[in-house]
Length: 153
Image (cartoon, rainbow, N blue to C red; front, side, top):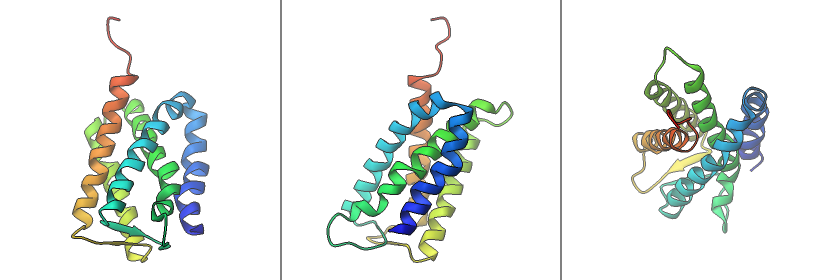
């Protein structure tokens, strides 16, 4: 569990979170809560259907093993994605979403290779790709819907 807390919560907040707070504090306040919600919903769904197991394996409260990721890495990556799209003039949102999706899928694949997570019930890396693609897209659309300045208003 220490590795999960370190890699899923502490390092992301120290590296990504502290940098983003200096760059755009408002964005963190806007995006992290929605990112946490998305992450909790998806990880709860996957845990209930036994599509994946993140170690350490516990008898009760297996969802706690992904809690550091739900509160750290995943919402911060959603925030960083929006920041990158905001700052970029030459790269479109879809390219950023695909890049973040590929990066996160590779990170998870490394966790699987290190035997820190295992797939079950027919789950595989291709399905993992879509469980990152869709939430990153939803997070970006949420930002556009909720926070992007409306033209003419």
